Image: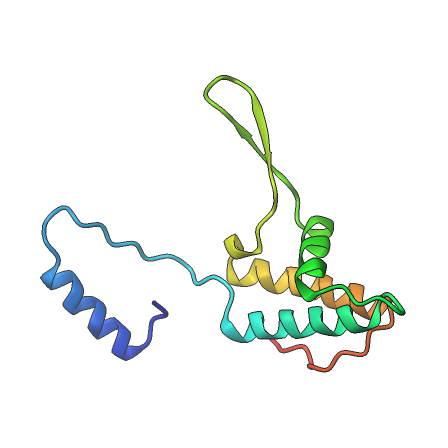
Length: 122
């Protein structure tokens, strides 16, 4: 829940009424709805403009650009083997997602994509 005055009051009520043993977590917000809307608008513009005569779905461009700009992570499993984990935009914090969208925007501009949405200050 994003903190606003109302949500803070609601959170206090939830804490006061929570049974023993429950856990409360306060952490930085992940990407905003506005950032997410901008990102998918950029992906739509890319999907319509980058490959002449062939339009890939925005979700295909999401996969492509995510692999291009976000590093894979390494996880060691209990048997000692290593597993490479694909990057995820859903795990990015607000500032990390902003930096990622900036990279995607720059890539789009370098590929002569005319953006329908203006980038927003974060």
